[in-house]
Length: 454
Image 1 (cartoon, one colour):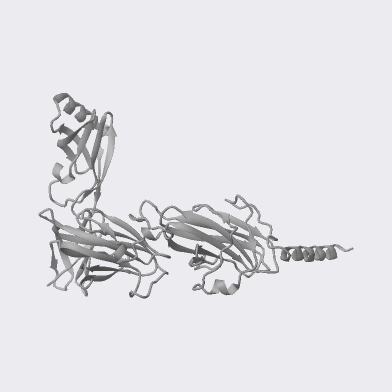
Image 2 (cartoon, helix red, strand yellow; image 1 turned 30 degrees about the vertical axis):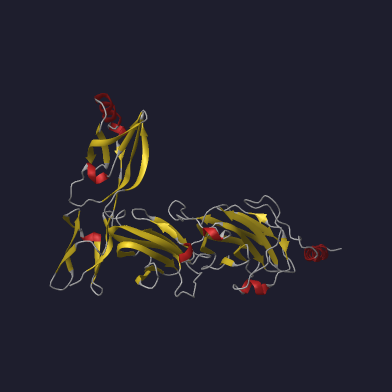
């Protein structure tokens, strides 16, 4: 028998074997594989092309761990194949779903993420320059990845669902899509928020709206909202009275834009949504946002209070200090600093603040004896100094801003009043849009925007 005939018979026998079993395709070991995935050949291609229809998820699926590469290798088959993986999230994430491939065919595979009901969350297509990767935002819960391999191709596929900066993009109130009691999709299930605290949220593939109940206890509050767009366009912020009959704000916020709204003392509902109208959800969006009900934490007050230890002393203080402009950076500008020593807590009464090096040296504790004050001064000197970070002062609609223009209408100078003293913004710290009469601030010292009312 000739070598060509032997080779032909081997291909025929191999193809027949592949078509005869539901687990016919060899699943070679992948980067993170712990068992051979089950291959299914019974699902319809119509389910793939129709994102609105739910697919049927098989009982037997291989587990997958996010942030790890998974590789699946395969040979030619006479029918389409579906390989399923299962993963569980213990929190809401913004995920970057990526893929790569090595194929010996012009036909290309595809990957999908579904929730446990079979509703599609995300899809990517290895081999296509603009769709081999995509962002998705997924609430806490169980999900499935389906790899679709068309018949007649061989090669390998590698994919990864990686979490994007979890310390920066997260939910302050974690929603589990499998537990309705955790959802804030309606004003009736809104989460309560208070002044002087920043709240983080995520809108995405299976979360199109968040509701909050805000209680303003001061005479007034400067409500602040910012967002980061990973996919899609702007999202809407709506603020209502408690009857929801009066609407104080209905603003579409773009990527990086700061939206501010001054609110009087009282109670409000806040709706954050990627819906264009109340009946048109837009799942093709992924956003992270921050609500600051007071606005002051991000503009003129210290934030991120944390604890550090130096020897037998434990210090608690604000680590982010807003830019102070031309005003004096006094101890009172840093907020309250406390020191615990031998089980007793003291307030810091005197300290040396270095504006250039951003350091604090404690010199005296209120109510402490001479020996303790001597010890705290020594422990916070040299390499033991406390450090802080300067954050931008955020200009809002209620800030005091003045400008000077040249004869041709361009802006010559901009001044912002910070802590009662005017600060002259540098030329690289602002841009002026003459059509909207809006000044946009940028840089390490100052940010936000302000519209000039002539």
